[in-house]
Length: 190
Length: 171
Image (cartoon, rainbow over all chains, first blue to last red; front, side, top):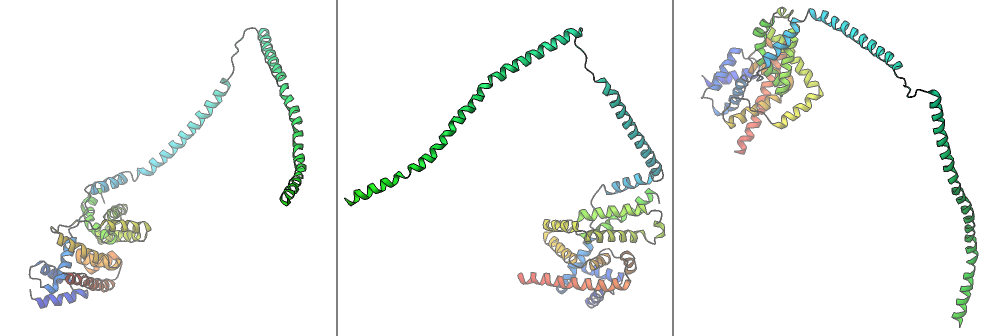
């Protein structure tokens, strides 16, 4: 290949004016072994372009995934709306059924809660109950009698209040310290 | 269109869509998600697919729009940062690390171009589409494509010169 022609093609290439055939000529030239050093960068560039073209989408399951997605969509396209409506009706019916059964359950369950008597003779039961209640109230009274001694404590506290007067007494005593001062004065003058 | 025809005629375009999405997003996982979404949208429009002159071009347009939406979303920006920190993954047939280095460096340069230029240079120089096809895919005029292709190619040359001259200086 004539090097002058290649250089002309490169200039055309950079102006965006080369045809596909002319570009093919350039690609072929740069794959050959006769590329001069000053065109080494173009060799790198054209080799990059051609190598890039062999890059592939690597995911092996890609086709399978797409086909699965579109066939699922395609086969149900027309019945889709009908099926959807059926689902809606069925879900509404199911909800109503659940509501009714829950309501029924609570309505029938409530009156079932009642206490069963454990006695046969009502008068005897009454007497027994009264006896137990009297016992409880009797014990309660003895307990509260004991508590009266706690009330005595209050009187004790009242007596203790007088101790607070001690403080004012102490204050008046402070005046005695003057005596001490005058004593010191006298001893130092000696 | 039946599922079978879809599988035979439409699905094989997945590699092209994936490369295009990956060029824009620089994230293989997100690119795969976008391609999947593209096919689901194509299938939902299967009744109208025969009206399009080229299903492939229509698929590319969907992928492009999904990618640009994704780029605008905030989540993508954080994804992209993490992927960049992980470094570029080796998924090329290059055998030697020196060649792999070169590949990754050029990739970095191409991916640093503005989105529109990146799409255009990819569709032309990697995938080999005609200007008319690209105009349909990108919803741009042939003239806009030609102008931006020229800009992208010149910018790439400049960046390559910068990257590899420094390398010469180092050696």
